[in-house]
Image 1 (tube, one colour):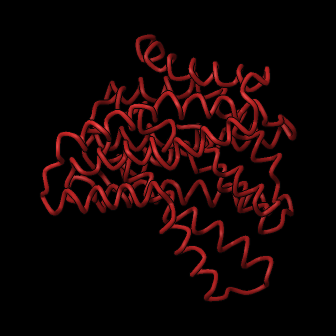
Image 2 (tube, one colour):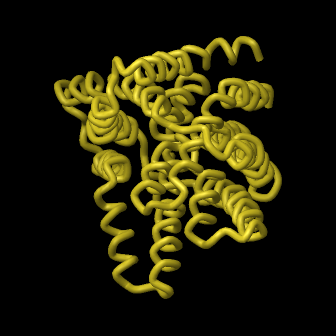
Length: 309
C-alpha cells in the first residue's frame, strides 16, 4: 500500500504545485483557463488519439465491461438523486449533485495515472469509462436541466446533446484513433513523434491545471460536499466492483481498472456545467475541492486493493 501511495504522490504533488500557483496568483485565473484549453483541445487529444490508434475496437469495446460500469454508476446516480429529492431539491440541482457523485476526473487524471500505475493495458478500459461518462451521463445532465426548465423535452435538446458530443475533442480523438486503427494504416514516424511530444504535455499540463483551478474553488456547503465526496470516492467504486466482480463478471484486470477509474475525484467539467447553467456552482466547486484532497489517500487504498486481486 505504501508503494502505491508513493507512486500516486507525484501526481498529486503536481496538482499541489498548480494549487499553490493559483492561490498565490502567480498563475492567474485567465492563465489557468488558457492552460486548460491547451490540454483539453491539443495535448490530451493527441495522447488519446495516439493511444486509440494503437488499439483495435475489439480491444476497447467490451459490452460486459460497459454493463458493469454502467450498472454501478447508475445505482450511485440513483442514490444521490433519491437523497437530493428527499431534501426537496429541484430537478436541476439534483442532476448536478448526481453528476458530482459519479463523474470522475478520468480524462485529466485517470488516463495518465492509471496507465502508469496499472500498465498500458489499462488504456482501453479507461477510455471505455471515459466514453460512457461523456456519452451517457454528460448527455443526461443536459437533458434533465434543460427539460426541467422548459417543462418538457424538445427534439432540439437532442440536437444540442449530439452537437456537444461531436464537438468534444476527447470523443473526436478516441473515435479518430480507433478509425485509424481499423483502417490498419501505420502511423508515419514524424506523425508519431509529433503526437508523442504534444501528448507528453498532457500529464503535467492537466495535473497543473487541476491544481490551479482548485485554487479558485470555494469550500461552501461542506456537509453536502462531504456527502458527494463519499458517493464518488467510496460508493461509486464499491458498486462498480459489485457490477464487475459479481453481476457482470469480467476478467480481474479489467475489473480492477474500471474500479480504480470509479475511485477518482469529481471532474472539473461538472463545475463548468453548473456554472454554465447557473445551477449550484458552489456546491459542485466544494465537491471537487474536497474529493480531490481526500482522494490522495482513497485512490491509493483502492489501487492498492486492486493490485492484490
